[in-house]
Length: 40
Image (tube, rainbow, N blue to C red):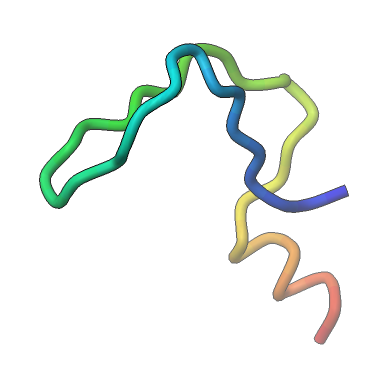
């Protein structure tokens, strides 16, 4: 499965230049390039 999912930790508004932090990443994820090359 591919895609980006966000969990809301605090409600509010996202502004230009706000920082988004990756808190955790599953070990079995593929990059966009890897998915593209598989689908070719």
